[in-house]
Image 1: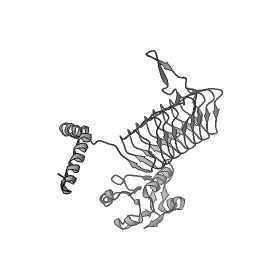
Image 2 (image 1 turned 135 degrees about the vertical axis):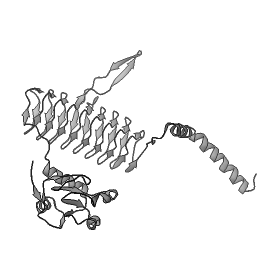
Image 3 (image 1 turned 90 degrees about the horizontal axis):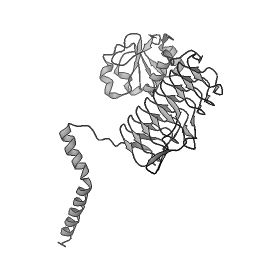
Image 4 (image 1 turned 180 degrees about the vertical axis):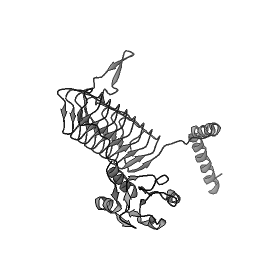
Length: 328
């Protein structure tokens, strides 16, 4: 494990202003509530300020407006959360496998592998696959023929890249498979979570832009396009031919219907169903909160009759307006 580092050494590498002793030695990061001596923690959310007073950490990362809340040695910066992420990277480099191809992996002779790649046990890499420099496939990853993955990719166990998209046509009451002749093109610095699946395109490629972060158990349908630096939390499902812009965030369990477009800098809340295109940046939410069953059933019944209620309200408004004008 790297380190330890003094606060001065951390600030020299990452910036920030130190308040208090600079030679405090840090061995690891820790949570605000459970950090122990020798660890550094962070405060970014005002809701957790009360926990700061009892923290056992040796130092804390915080913003200037919270600097006076503690006497602990501290690093003051503009964004404590991202600063903490970089400090954690100092102490906890990416989990790595041995470089090269594990003996149990199957890699086609026509696959083109970049420098310093790592392909773990049980992986399958098909004909014509391209894997960029410094990329890592953890055990059990499957990359179908013809797919392209950029540099510094992290693909976690069980991910499947380039399986056939769900392309079928009905003929005489039966389903006819449509050959999926596109591929998958993945940019640089992409991370793909465990058991996530990215389907190959029907005719054109499915495209994942640079810096995209996909959590576990996500489904990306055929011919989707995901813009650079977009992040999706677990269990998101994106239907075929949906186009998602850059710098978007998609909350856990959200559903995006096919053939829709989502603009750059759109943020979709967890469990939201997107059924129409989003053309304006902002946050979009469509959740129906859980409740006890009796209350939920009653509220759902009201929602089902909202259109009728709206018609009744409009009718009453018209009658009131007539009375005010002396017409009725």
